[in-house]
Length: 208
Image 1 (tube, one colour):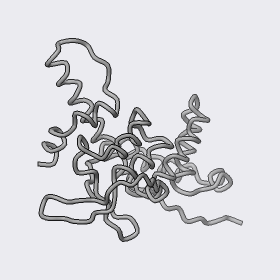
Image 2 (spheres, one colour; image 1 turned 90 degrees about the vertical axis):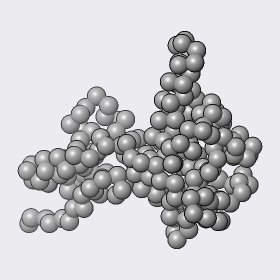
Image 3 (tube, one colour; image 1 turned 180 degrees about the vertical axis):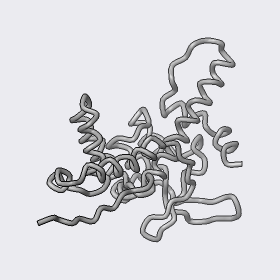
């Protein structure tokens, strides 16, 4: 008997949570030298298809699904979202990265570099906190008290995570250019500590 299954194909990173993305990356590492297997992993993980259903999927359907995923999977450069809504609560990005509280600064810089890995949700939990006040283009967020609630950010869509990541990547690039222009010497890529310490002016310019 022919089995019918309903397949939901994500259309962008807005449809993928950090939780699913991390699980996907972990699985893809098991097939680093096998592009065909990695393509199959993308289909099973992103579309929620188990291995038995994948085997029974028509070749034409598989090719079409893979093509749809390939059309957006490489587009990770999303804009920064200053505000993120989670369970009806508005979270705002730390308004002044170069003047954040010592506790927040210390907790973030323990990770040294910024990348989307198992520590990323913790970094997001420090950077984004509930908004307490908004007046036109300015806002305030809850004081950081050292509580990291990273679980809630695991279910935030990847377009928002990538937006924050590439904001820092762009800050890092700007800092490298600034250092090179002032010293005329080759320098290494700044880590998160140097980015936070020198980000005040750049972050203000990026939001104007």
